[in-house]
Amino acid sequence: MEYKILRELVQNHSKYEGCVKVARAPLIHDGFPGTFNLSFTEYPWLKEYGGFVDFDHDYVFSTVQSCIRPNDFPLLHTVDSWKYLGVFEIADLTGAVSLSKKPDYNELQKWQIRELIDFLKKVGIEQDRVHPSYCVGGTVKELTGGRYSFDFLVPKDEISRKAFLEAGVPEKNLIPDRSRDTFLSLHLHRPSPWGYRTEVNVTLGDCNKDELLDIATTEYIPWRPIYTGSDNSKENIIGLEESESGFAISAVGLERLCMAINAFPTVRDVDYISQIYDGYGVIDEAQDELAVESLRALHRIYADVISYGCKPGRHRKEKIRKMLSNIPDFDKEKLRELLKIHSQTQPWHPELREGIEPTIEKIEMYRAQKNNRSHAA
Image (cartoon, rainbow, N blue to C red; front, side, top):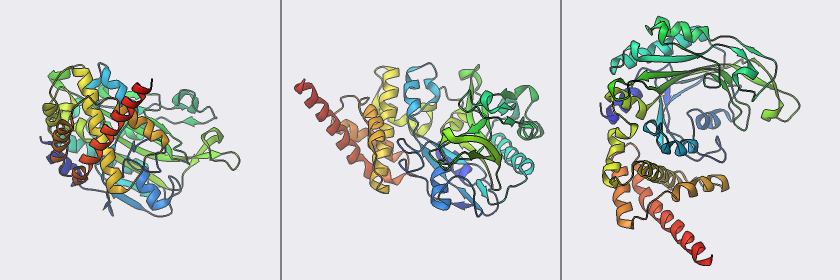
């Protein structure tokens, strides 16, 4: 299946009642200070509510978010590099459901899990290939690996476990988990909701027969943090309380899902990505992955700087410089050729055309500064 077709299937899937389509977040925004967009809800929530908790009205939205996770770049040098990208897309399947009143999570979570499993069957991934994780419960200290130690016992996520079984996933495929992978315990520079998460993994067939690939997630958020004093910092979280508002989402990583559907050996074999690798040419595989993924990420960043008018601060610039240092000594014409391919293969991101020359300019500027420092030394 072509990536474009999969992307459209997810976008056009039936959504929660009242769902509205919204533009994606820029890669640089206030929801993730010092880094790039890492997730799905933060930018829309800030625009709609001004925060991440205590929703005063319903807001159900759908989009395809672009993400850059700097921590993934070092993994391009490891045996797990087959599943990592420098920039990737996350899309909701049934809408990001933000509600002013706490819903019946038993009903809502069962519905979005059923929709997800039915969709996976539709694209050729049967239930016996699905291996979802779920939270087995425990103390906050256990589940967060000591990051938080206040006294609160998190119940087992029976809702998700039963929902996967009812959707036809074999019980032997369920993965009990006791970590932050299935217990959302965030503080994103402001009060953030806490709750349950499932990681939906699938087997990949003959190409990677022993591997599981995380291709989707479901979440529902029963709690909000309690703080001591007036400073709402993560150090001052002393407990959790039931949230009066609610949130749930089922989302897929589009490139990984496309890889699983097509039984590709690596995520870079997805059609829109493989073409820039073809244009690059292979010299050394591990080094090529880092170079191409850095170039792809830089192109997306500078295109957003132009189209959204956003500016990277000091910490983001440090991360950008690391990416710039990974770009080989190609001349302008070679860079332009690669960035044109990167633009043409993603018509859903028309801003990339305007980002070609600014990206080349920044690469050239970095090289000149590096040469000047070398001469000065």
